[in-house]
Each structure stands twice: as C-alpha cells, then as structure tokens.
Length: 93
Image 1 (cartoon, rainbow, N blue to C red):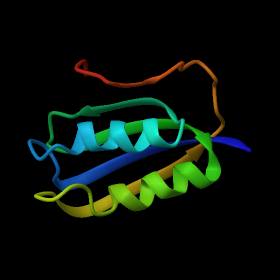
Image 2 (tube, rainbow, N blue to C red):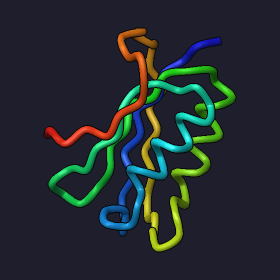
Image 3 (cartoon, one colour):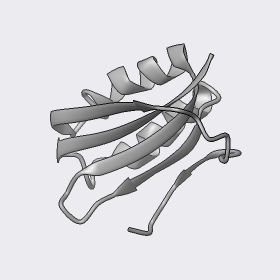
C-alpha cells in the first residue's frame, strides 16, 4: 500500500552526508519525494512509497549516516499525492 511520510530530523544532521544518504536509501526502495536542509540546522524529507520501505527509511533516519548525531525525529504520516517521479535533494527553502 502506497503511503507518504514527512520527516523532520534534528541534531547534527547537516554536513554529514545525511541528504545524500537519505536519497540512496529511498532509491534502493523505489521511494519518491525529496529531502532538504532547513535554516535551523534540521533536515526535512517528504517520502512516498510502499509502507515497508518508508518505515525502513524512517528507521535509518533515526540514526543517519556515520558522523550524524540525531537528537529528535518527528514523523507525520500523510496521504500520498503521487506527484513525485523520483527522489531528489532540494536546495530551496
């Protein structure tokens, strides 16, 4: 079943390969959406795909890549929109 999830990850999560790692996790699982850094130092992601793959990515994001220090993760399950064809790193705010 296709679902969507929005993540907000706090801690030492910028400058540690977090966005690229999230994209790799998503691509391995056929998940679409995006990830970006926010001005407050957190990382935000919106993912759409099969629930099992999304849960695996949420688990990965709860610790992130080596060098990251995740202090908090907020998870919000949403209705999927189907508007994304791939997974990208966004540079807009």
